[in-house]
Length: 370
Ligand SMILES: [Mg+2]
Image 1 (cartoon, rainbow, N blue to C red):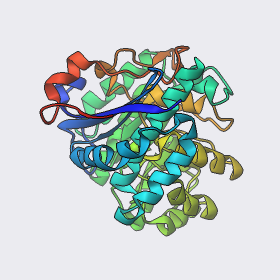
Image 2: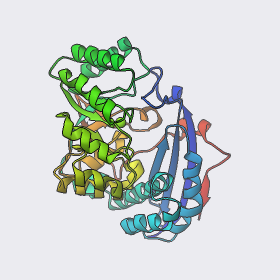
Image 3: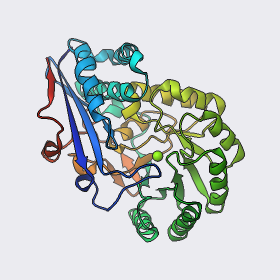
């Protein structure tokens, strides 16, 4: 089996196409577009696999360039079953332009495509191909909702509660007073028997985060996510020692190496690896290391593929249900009563709607290599 063809495409999709519920923002940004970079691999036998990554509006053209000029030529003629070796080779080849960031997400897109090919060749859904531990996982409802008014936020959270979710996550990172009032309003509205998590998206330094965490203590918070920037591991360690609230982070870590210091120092209690940064190969390495340190996993976003990965590890906590790509997909993830289930079609079975995406393609045509 060998790779006969690769094709890459880059789309810049305005918010109105994928999100019908008004503004969408977090502490450091408001999102007007998502960029989607897709990468398809086809074997000589005609089996295809789809990889992808995304940005919150910037940098997609650099990812596309790496896939087109550096990664696709390496894959032609290779056996996709060598996927783990290929992940390491690509990282080694691109090391001198940086092992993280653009490099990591481009390698991740190719890696996801190769794992998809392998699972589809075997005729198995990805979670079974990887070695299933479970066939369902609790999902929590999540939203990028810092740009909503307090009333809109409460209505959104109550709406998720009514759909059967028993765990919810909201953004924080506004003013001190606003944050406390918004958290209090949501807690009052959803009741005491619903888990509530907060996501600060790197808004604070250690002193401010410590102050904020104390202000949230009356509201029974299950975790506070990314209180600090990802480079401040020492800050996370100090903060985690000073609070009983579990800290979560990992969505802005791009390689397994970047998780190492967090695990070794007890900086966080809940790692949140993201397959669009790590690839399936890197994601599974992080999951395995987390297991060794006794930490449960709560992967970041893209529930459609993470439902497969989280169901294939023993240390699963929950799945983030954030349906931002739902309108762009042919088959969104199945979530009922707050429980998500991976599909039984071969591979990860994520396929984007070409009809919806085509008007938003960046550049004249997709890049193909044979
Ligand atoms: Mg987050």
